[in-house]
Length: 289
Ligand code: HEC
Ligand code: HEC
Image (cartoon, rainbow, N blue to C red; front, side):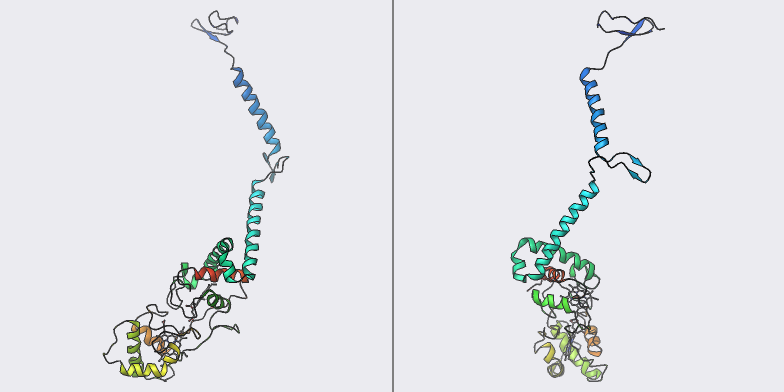
């Protein structure tokens, strides 16, 4: 039951006038520091509300008097980065490879641009990180069809292999079986000899006939000792890595009807800076010469 407001004799504070079972409620005020910080917070809140983007309405929102936008700031940051990146790619396009390699900043851009362009354009055929698959050479090993210097790699990327680009890399292994140039028996013999070069067991122990056939029909392209020939992209048969599989059946299949792998040219699709970045990226995958 309310009684009248009076001063409490112990605390010196006014009572609220509420009394429960004889106990009177004190009207203790908020501490001054708390009150002022609260008011300051409200004022700061109102000022921020007016200066910065705040209340949404209809299709938009109040943009604030300062016109601040974290989205615009982020986009400006991205635009600035990509301008730097473009400027670097232009430098890479005109500099020679030695200059790019000597410049850590250009080299970092080349590796970045190369990695991204590789994932977008080359991965479907050459595999993630260039590990290769049957018919599509691995690019991180040191077995090269057309050459592993950064210049040779760039030329392969620019013009591709066996396509309509006038400067495309090109060569034709004859279809010895399909055209009847070699009989099935001769193919078996020469496949035995090639098996030895591959490091797998030949069918028969006598490879002299195969060796003679190889010298007559194959050595001109694949080399006397199977070392390959990069001028015509003839694979080194004496290597441990093979484009079309390392077993005897793959050798016989290639002798009957060669697959003649095709790679598109990229000089019409990618700019010079990106192609050179790709060459530097591929060169750095592990097998670069
Ligand atoms: C459509 C499939 C395909 C695509 C896409 C492709 N390649 Fe190739 N690439 C091939 C084939 C097939 C060969 C081997 C051709 C041959 O038999 O000589 C090859 C060969 C190469 C070689 C030569 C390897 C050597 O041992 O000399 C390089 C380097 C290369 N590719 C890089 C690239 C890069 C970089 C890209 C992306 C810009 C790319 N390729 C995209 C199919 C492809
Ligand atoms: C005119 C040059 C030429 C001649 C001659 C030639 N080859 Fe080839 N050979 C190539 C080329 C180029 C390739 C890769 C082409 C492709 O993608 O099919 C190849 C690929 C191969 C492969 C697959 C290699 C791999 O890494 O998977 C085998 C095996 C092979 N040749 C064996 C022979 C044998 C054996 C003869 C002789 C009977 C022969 N070649 C004659 C040019 C030649």
